[in-house]
Length: 82
Image (cartoon, rainbow, N blue to C red; front, side):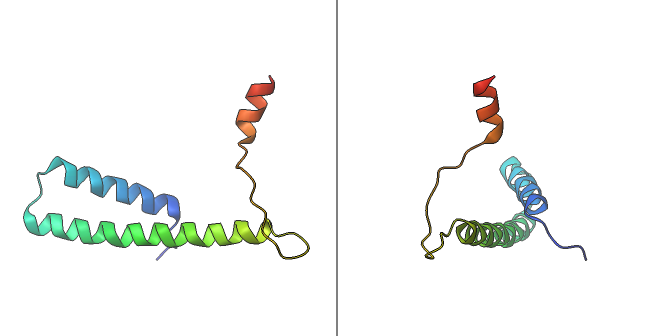
């Protein structure tokens, strides 16, 4: 089985939410979808936590202190300059 990426998990979660919002599932089907959605939500949260830790490591200075910097979207900066 291929490794579940964050993007794939989010798309699946969005699809499940859509199915649940439509309200045309039986109670058993809705419960199964809800359980699947909870698992996907936890997976996404775990992946985001992992990425946050990696970013923190990348932002550590020589003394081991983590400095916080605002996220800069390079695309927005280029558009603002142009």
